[in-house]
Length: 161
Image 1 (tube, rainbow, N blue to C red):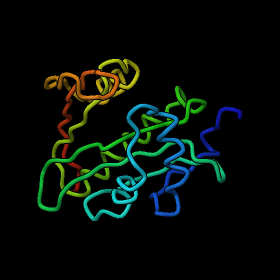
Image 2: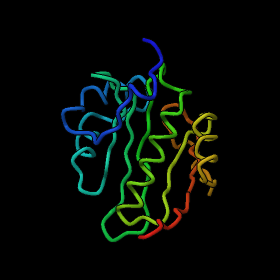
Image 3: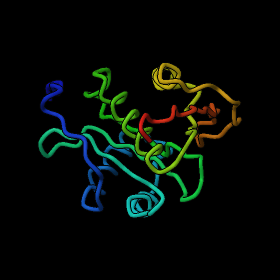
């Protein structure tokens, strides 16, 4: 697979029809602690979340989701994953920004997330997009026994909002 060019890539809302492709990427990206198919299926149809996929043609390159409960001013990035061959191209950053916009559109003023303490690339991305570390959850990711870094990003008010 060649690296996708920016003009070849589409970002769109995920649907239940994407579940199989999302789960294949989920298992490849998180082999020891992947979400179950039932959990992901519920997330895709939840009224509190918005999931996006990144694709080139019929090929899923990545996905991510944000959750904001109606009436809340807080949101959570639930997950973000990019196929190994699509990493380092800025697609994950674009997906993260789209999820932050989606959270803001749903009324969130701040977004939280957890990132594995051993995922330096993701951590650096989040810091570069305005997330700050709030603390750590020891031994959060099992069975790998890896801490979670809890992070928060304050969202800037949209102009003309």
